[in-house]
Amino acid sequence: MSKFVAIAAIVTMANAGRAAADEETPAPPTRPAAIARTWRGAMPVVGAGYSIPLRSALSLGVIWGEHGGCLMASRGVLVQLEPGVSGGKASIGLAASMGGPVPSVGVAMKASLIRTWGSAYRAEGDTTYAGPEAVLNLFHVKANLGYAWPVSGRGRAGILVFGVGLGF
Image (cartoon, rainbow, N blue to C red; front, side, top):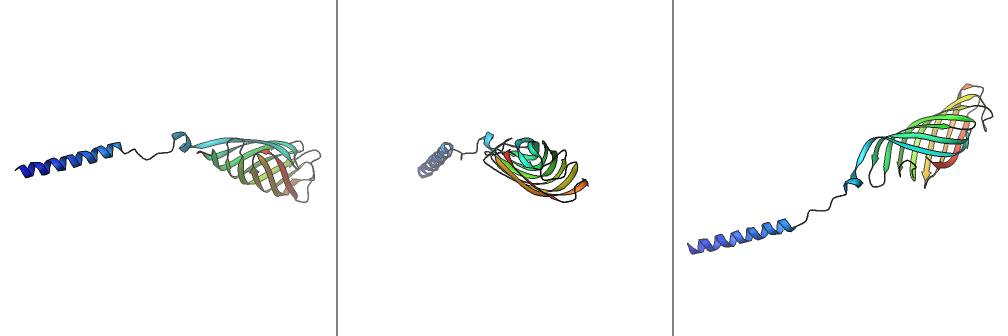
């Protein structure tokens, strides 16, 4: 009987030591909630620049999609309006960016509808153009390049759409 009690005591102490060791082992680290948090919705994007054919223009839009994370990344559908001195532009497309409302890095592919008025630069005035456009943004400096064809008005030839500026 004494051998049985001794074995039972040794097993009990071993299990107690193992349980204490398990309690002292810290849980693996997890990412802070603020870094991991993402949400779906609209993220505003703003910018300003000079472009052909709008000349000086402001850019106001939203990226509707998924946002957040440690880099404040956004990706989704971009809807953008750009009123300018010689015309206005409305665009819709896909975008991805990092850095919030004035992204430090971003790309977009969009379809644009451009309406010129007055003396538009390198385009016929009072004409509506439509076409694809690509946007690249690095360190808050953006460049856009595209081509647009006339869909109504006095214009007969397509135009090169090009611009540089700040923001998105």
